[in-house]
Amino acid sequence: MNWTDERVEKLKKLWAEGLSASQIAAQLGGVSRNAVIGKVHRLSLPGRAKAGGTNTAARTPKRTTSAPRAPNYASRITTTRTVTRQQGATMLKEEIEIETVEEMEYVPKGNVVVPISRRLGLTELTERTCKWPVGDPLKDDFHFCGCESPDNSPYCSYHQKLAYQPVNERRRAAARVG
Image (cartoon, rainbow, N blue to C red):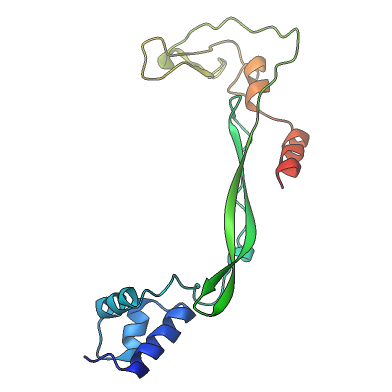
């Protein structure tokens, strides 16, 4: 198969439109997908725009969970930015997703009473005991809090305050990042 100037120009056009190597091979005819990939590589063609334009704006942002969350975990928020890059003599605008991280530090309130852990193993837990993990699960001293937990909660009242953030605090944190 010969790569004529016309076929090379058509390859460049289809590649810039975002067609896959298989689709380009089918349109050119008499050439395999691998031949298209090889020619694209030899021509040093840049990355291409996605077929049908970018639909990044239509995507919903990734949600961050608020519970349970141990202290000092980072809050991840995904934002979309428009960047400009050059492709040949043409400047293209693309939307890219950027994941920003905000370090959220737990600051305990003064005069807090920390309950004494009952140091229960997994098999000793019941529906009325706190299931807050303490330590490294791969170590021998790993255990669960085991203190009494209120109805419909896996944690004691102390660990509930660590695990669950009020909605207003989450909104304030998201507003600072955005």
